[in-house]
Image 1 (cartoon, one colour):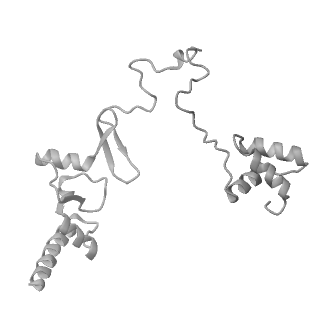
Image 2 (tube, one colour; image 1 turned 135 degrees about the vertical axis):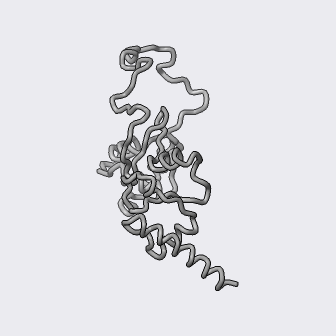
Image 3 (spheres, helix red, strand yellow; image 1 turned 45 degrees about the horizontal axis):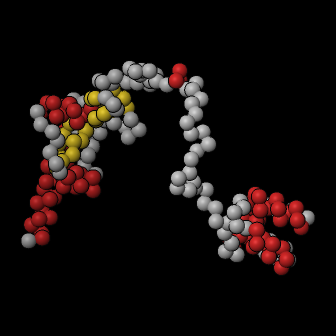
Amino acid sequence: MARLLTPEQDQFLSDHVKGLGNAELTAILNENFGLTLTRQQVKTYKKNHGLSSGLTGHYKKGHVPANKGTHNGGWEPTQFKKGHQPANYMPVGTEKMKSDGYMYIKIADPGKWRQKHRLIWEKANGRPIPKGHKLIFGDGDRLNFDLNNLILVTDKQMAILNRKGLIRNNAELTQTGIVLADLFSKMHERKRK
């Protein structure tokens, strides 16, 4: 578009850019010079030539809305009534499989969920999972909540189990993998000394 505008058209655009939106400016420019420019062409021209209308699209401080003090009504019947529950509400105790592949249980409203295997382990052991530890499924099945299948490991053990591929589809083999992870850790410590 830069080559299409004559010096006269360019001057006209510069003189009229203040206070006009791109659509309005395009209409005036096209009308005065018999052009068929699009709003996007004028917008791009303004940007390329550092021209600004000064319009921000924001209300100025102290602006009073046109409908201030009016009440149209009609929205009250569509509001939620006190005690209303949405159709997709799930009560406390609901179990749900989430996208991460773990089963969750709703433990409180509104929307507080916890992983089922963690709740089972914590209830059986009477304490929360300690910091720096992970709870894994010994056989890799995230739906096997048997206490013998829920194994607590340290972060260090977990790193070695993953690195060496020691988590198997059998809880007993995974327990053996944990013993091996501890051996690898001790061997590494001895080598460092």
